[in-house]
Length: 265
Image 1 (cartoon, rainbow, N blue to C red):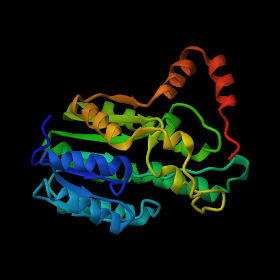
Image 2 (cartoon, one colour):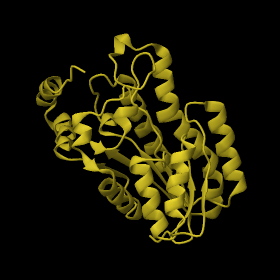
Image 3 (cartoon, rainbow, N blue to C red):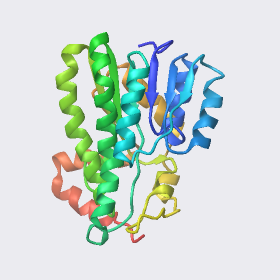
Image 4 (cartoon, helix red, strand yellow):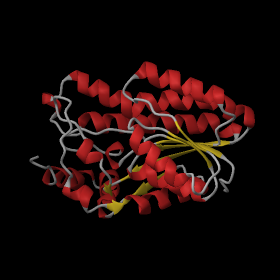
């Protein structure tokens, strides 16, 4: 799969995996739409990308605002020709016990990590279908495979992504549109620093597992390779990926281990 001159839209493009994916695509000559909530960071990524591609535009918006997401998604889809590749990568995490987390936080996480991706995807699908080609990717997490301590809302949203995008894959296959769900494990990105607590405030803490995780660039290389191969699912993780195997085949062992790795923070 060659992305030269192909229009690609990446959300969560201001840092981490999204930034690295944007740079990789730019170096392949893709035409880019970069989205996120931090305008300054997006502009910085655009300045790097434009050195390698002849088209890179920034469309900032807040994934937690459903009205804004739907408006921007529809406007972007209407303004551009068919988007060849959509990467739904924006997201937010949290660190709080389920019983201490107000429903407003659950709803906020679900808006950002689930509904925003669904809204953007639905906006671009019609032109993909008309063009008879396209690829949709979404960043889930190992938390979309099993629950994690103090991440109830995050894990729920990531599980929801699997249900929606697996169904979408079945429905769009006759239209030559592929869907890839990516399940990263511990990746060295700012997501844990920006994770919110039960009051909705950023924790400002980098998890040790995140700090020692796979570099974002290495993750992005594997991510893009999975898209090119039209892989339906890909896990990008270190030794923690064994937990997926254990949950499926040895659930009792899995549960004992998942209890041991709970963090007091």
